[in-house]
Image 1 (tube, one colour):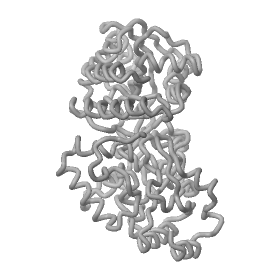
Image 2 (spheres, one colour):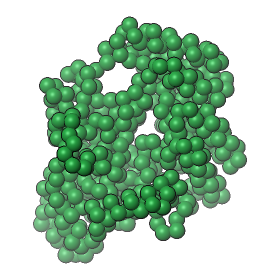
Image 3 (tube, one colour):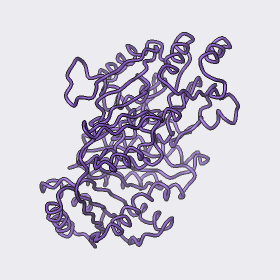
Amino acid sequence: MEDAAVREIERVIPADRILTSLEELYSYSYDASFGEYLPQLAIQPESAIEISKIMKIANKHKIPVYPRGAATSLSGGPLPVEGGIVLDMTRMNKKLIIDGENLLAIVSPGVITGEIHYQAEKEGLFYPPDPSSSKVSTIGGNLLENSSGPKGLKYGTTKEYVIGLEIVTPEGEIVRTGGKTVKNVTGYDLTRLIVGSEGTLAIVTEATLRLIPKPKARKTLLATFSRLVDSGYAITKILSSGIMPAAMELMDNACIRAVENFSPCGLPLNAEALVIIEVDGHPLAINEEIEKCEEICWQVGAAAVRMARTEEEREEIWKARRMVSPAITQMGPTKISEDATVPRSQIPAMMEKLSQIRKKYELNLVVFGHAGDGNLHPNIITDKRNIEEMKRAENAVSEIFEAAVSLGGTLSGEHGIGTLKAPYMEMELGEAGLDLMTKVKNAWDPNNILNPGKIFPKAGQTKVVLV
């Protein structure tokens, strides 16, 4: 980085918020995905005005800029793959306003998503998007990845709840999109374009979120199955019966064993799969719905069904699901997390294909996820030091995506594209579709300085490179 650029930055940002030491920069070189890239500088801005000034300097000197929240991304979203500047957004966490009269939350990007849940529920309101990392992830990162979680089945993803943004463009302009009204058709919907753009189009400096009334009651059950495919049939049959659960979560046998080894929950080790089903709404309606879900699980061959009778029992059921990620991380030093998504009717077929891929490449491949909306999370547990096994993992990842797309699905349901899925974009979008997205990126960011190296594949790249 040019000395002139550094001196310009030092004139607009206090020295204690410019990080340059090697040990500090290493802490910004990785996220929850795969790969490490060292930035040249890390900056901790505290306002949109500061970010505007930084972006104007970066644009002038053509320095890559990488916005970063809590770095819980599973696709390489904040990784500084071309060096440059990391913008640590965690100090922008001062604003969290719950507007009960208008059913809104107005928040800074560095606010922890779980804190929005907590403050909204204190007012009898509900912010539905609930990624598993919500207790540590920031709302800014959630917006730019369009994160969701278990409740995405019934309530939708983050983009359904973002109605206004303050942003800084790659060229340093401060712009507001949307507003506080639920209805707004004034021109192009720039708000929705930015949500899910993975930090490639703009930096979010404030968000206005839509809230809904908190459901009055909820009921939860856990069903175990001797055959993985039967769990898929249970999911599709419940959804086609007219019931819309708040969440339907799947864990395969490898996940069950990992959780029991990590934090025993009393799960049956011989079950091929378990499904957690939760319904919410009016107390009388959900009693009927949860009983119908139980009946369907028995009909398709469940080995056991356990209904939560108390809030403590419900928490015990959900504890098993929350333990999956930390549990499988203990199985090996390298975890490759994917989230290929298929239409609900294709869930049994996708699970069968994943089983075939596991056997073909002799990999430790575990499957869990938000099965109710077809958003499965195949995870490959491996060791990046084992070059031969990593090559097999590369081929397996390719086949996972090919399987999802062939079944009418998509590369990603909530993790984003980042660096790991960029090579497969043309597979799903086609050449013309990918070209259209490239034109949007070029129009917003003509010097390609904002989060470069993400979403779009390098020339000739058709496969993720893990070694």
